[in-house]
Image 1 (cartoon, rainbow, N blue to C red):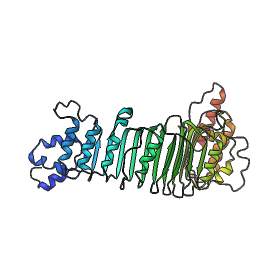
Image 2 (image 1 turned 180 degrees about the vertical axis):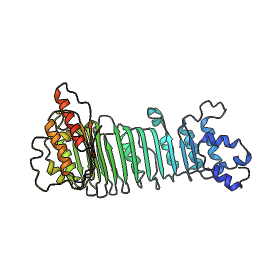
Image 3 (image 1 turned 90 degrees about the vertical axis):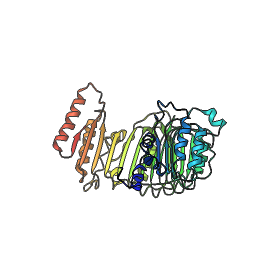
Image 4 (image 1 turned 120 degrees about the horizontal axis):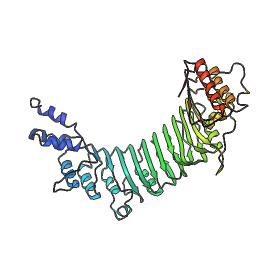
Length: 419
């Protein structure tokens, strides 16, 4: 290092970002300390000030480091801080910082949020942000944000939100292309209208009874967890869609034609059959279908799926390449009359991989017939995975069914495997 030109040393040290490493390097030599102004990124881990005994508060220590940097582009702070500390930092770097990530830790601090200015309000000073990620956020009131004209990515992880506050925050970010809300509670009704949004991941924690309306003509990827009512009308660009509700029920879905959809995942304890049948109808061009829904039925009644015609299903999804069937959907394809319409010349043209989850030996004959039909008519089938989970029965039928599956595997050992 001593033999290198100053410019090379500055370039190497400018790629440090951990605050502790930077502090240690400053003590090595005057030459190394003079490289501090050229840092582009600075990261303060959660334990940055563990064992710290200096007279300055952590807020002031961070401020002093930031004041020595000429053009910081990325700031990540996981260590505890105050709203006044954050405000003072952003006054220093507001014009240069493009990527900001903060562990807010104020999800339960309602009094501080009301008395303000809150940590969330302070973020507005960073006018040129391109990405913003916040952890542990309380958003009880609309944040006092001006419009972030350059913000493309907003991620909030672990938050307590009010509907009006979330709506106001989204209005301040009109150029978003990526929106992630994970582990968020308190939301009842969400309306997202972002003309440039391409990727959206929403995970609402609680009773699973939220409603979502999304108007984003460029949306390509949408993952939603915890909503009972969904309306997404502009879907011409949507390629990947995942809908799950682990706590509540999915009552209503309203999508436009899913002509570009390649991947569809439907998960949850209970979906209304109308919602399931509509999703299957709209996703006729899908290439990968994942279904893990245990029951159908309205309101409190938990009902099995109605019978699904094997031939009609695959004829309606001619481009299907991978099919993950779990629980009720596999049972629906294994009913007595599911295979009655098989005609000469019927094939499943594109299917290459099937993953089947089996829990019960009930209707074993029909289930074996369905598995054999997938092998027979799936002319391009390369892999069939049969997962046997929690098969609870003291009757000999369980052993007989397992023996039949093992026979099927032996006869098709190049394709079938058991997990």
